[in-house]
Image 1 (tube, one colour):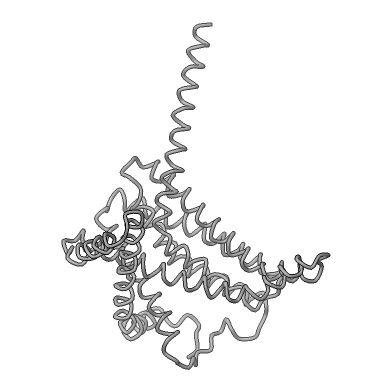
Image 2: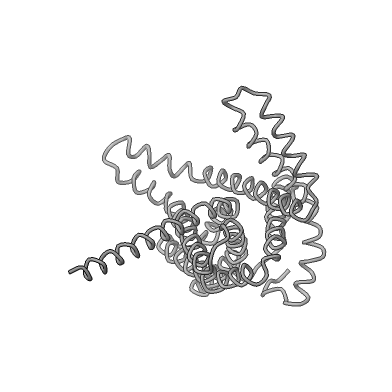
Length: 324
């Protein structure tokens, strides 16, 4: 009997350790995922364009196809790569984060530039040409998965940098949980956004009460504005997160002048308001200054990317089926 009680006590102890480990993984995944907010919002803002132009019944299958590709990107390619970095080349994490941050700044600044500077688009892409719908769907999904790979690489690197120093399995579990959780959140949100106008139409057409039809009409009319708002939020988040990542990376490399000044300026602004608002004003001021730096860096990178890197990439890997 005493042996059975001892065994049960051991099992209970193991269960407690396992539960604590699960809690640690979940907490670590949530905390690390929060740092990837900019790339996550951008991912959610970018994806709906890939289902534009398809029949309503094909929208969810396409999103599901992209989501599966995203999971494969994160778990089969990026997670092992991140673990190799963490265990064999940790010194590479900060430069890679800075590279990803610079990419976010470039993407955000490019969106602002194209919104403010009128220009004519003369590009005709194969995926936009009329043809077999199934082939077009495959092309769109493949393009979305490629874009997701870039954003997922940035997300996984940010998550990795936010995991406290721990053992291999804890890092692997935290990365996996955070990666899957972010994918579910992003593509679940995208599915809701894409189908919201259909929900609105159904409510308007089939509602038995006036307020139901009114809600349906508001959803249909409001979704284009919501998408614009989501794009604005995604752009601002990219510039803020990208700028802060690069500034923090410069501090780690010994170039802390800008980061220290931003901190001091934000601190001074925070102490110009009542105590209850100091934390909010200080954080907002720092985020805004990080974002302004992100815009400036992104604008510098636009000609570098378009005039140097893009032609070099095209010369080595071809134009990916595009006709210009």
